[in-house]
Image 1 (tube, rainbow, N blue to C red):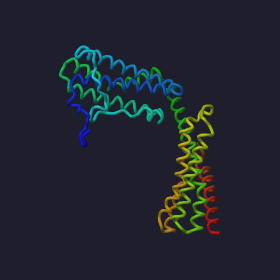
Image 2: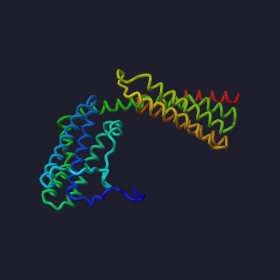
Image 3: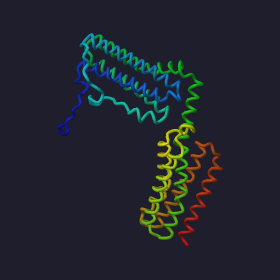
Image 4: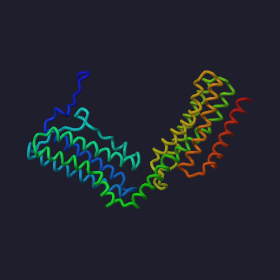
Length: 325
């Protein structure tokens, strides 16, 4: 490719045959995306899975109408043209990314898909000179615009209010078990367990760089250890806690963050400035942990605060006493 030269076609330069071919491939892609979501949700959220299966069927119906029009006007050979071949054309997020972000994120993505498809058909209809082509593209634009009502109808049919509420509760429970619980355990371990070595090193050496290195090693080491321990402790099949990989990532990353929070200030060369900032960060870390426990684990706030702050204060004092000895 010549530097600075794009190999993509501009939408305004596409022929009517190419616009129809692009619409056919886009509808096929969207139907496959909906079926992928349906397959992913079928076990835990069967009602939502049926909604996405029905939406995939509608997209397939649109594709068949477009193919029939192409056959009448241009014959059986449909040019190969896809979204990535057209400059500025809307794209779809990878299904492997979206489907792992929870059911609400999947629903939001579906709504975004319908809105972008509507805009495409409106723009395509403006470029069409053939009356039948303009009519069909306009009808599909209206169909995409009406998908919100269609989705509501499909949800009423396959996902009544009680089933929707149950799926939402299940999604929240799964989110807590897979992400919040291991992440909170990691944050608590990283924030509290690294207090003693970091502040012991700080008060023993008075050297901010050496203290930072101790904190970095303690934080990353604890993160790796917690991540592997969480992932290996339970495959999630019987407990329903979800993917061990996700739980390991949540636990390991939050453990490292918890320790790095009060290790990073020691990149500041002035000892008491760095230590004062580290004190402040520790204070907010401990109260954040108490808030998360109250928000997601339904632990009474003052009890959570007492447990976390008291435990953190004891470990913190231990580090200072040992470092000052």
